[in-house]
Every structure is written in C-alpha cells, then in structure tokens.
Image (tube, rainbow, N blue to C red; front, side, top):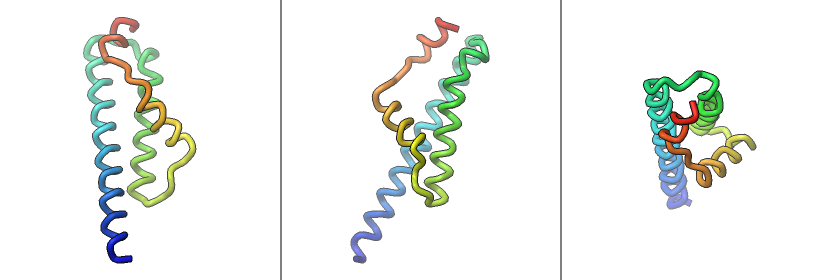
Length: 91
C-alpha cells in the first residue's frame, strides 16, 4: 500500500501541472487575441473555457472529483485545437 501513495501523488502532480499549463496557454491565447483587437463577443467562448479550466484546477487542488462539465472540457481539449490566428481573422 505504501507504493500506491507515491504513485497517486505523482498522478495528482501531473494532473495539476497539466491544468496549469493549459491555463497558461489559454490565457496567453486570449491576451494575443485582445492585443490584435478581437471583439469581446468573439472571445466569449474562449473565456468560458478558461473559466472551466480554472474551476477544474480549483477542484483538483481541493481534492474534489471532477464535475461532468470538466470531463467534457478535457475531451474537447484533446480533439479541438483552435489556432489564435484563425480566431483573430474571424473577429
């Protein structure tokens, strides 16, 4: 049982690190789009996804299980990558 505790801790650390990286990438993408003059309405979905990542991170830090919305966001993140230049052109 002593071997599973360090393994669980490493898994938790990796999850937190991945969420922090994702959060930083999303914040950076929003900052770039704002600097390029994107309209606030065009950033609404990205802001909502950023908030979902923040909520998921808060839940992970508190040790709470993931909510269904967080699982959907994680699945969407892995299949749907939007380039910042594409969004800037639409805005």
